Image 1 (tube, helix red, strand yellow):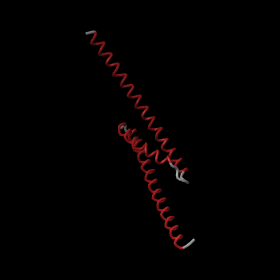
Image 2 (cartoon, one colour):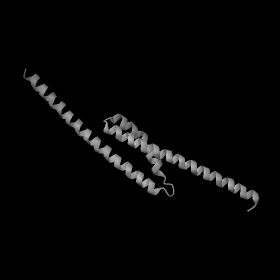
Image 3 (spheres, rainbow, N blue to C red):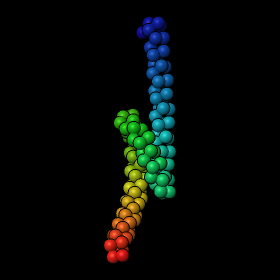
Image 4 (cartoon, one colour):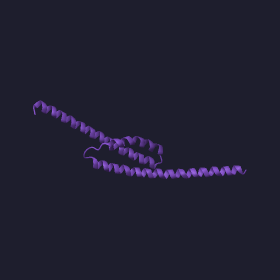
Length: 125
């Protein structure tokens, strides 16, 4: 290779390395944010803050697609581990949501029974 060609090649390679490292840093930030949001989502569900949990899920969803949409070479094992962790947390959140749904169903039944009793009382006065 001629000297000028070697320099151009070296500069292009260096730019590529910088681009790859900035991409890796950006990806790491996205993974960190994804883990943070998942933890916050679980905490909101555990404390019964379902509006907050819904907002966190809306914020988290596009990040899931970005992180898992493209697997960088050599990261499949880490991505699989992260995905398993997220799925486990999501199962916990689903269980908490199901419990709350059952609680609300019971409350609605009680309200319905109370209304029926009130109607029966008023009709017999």
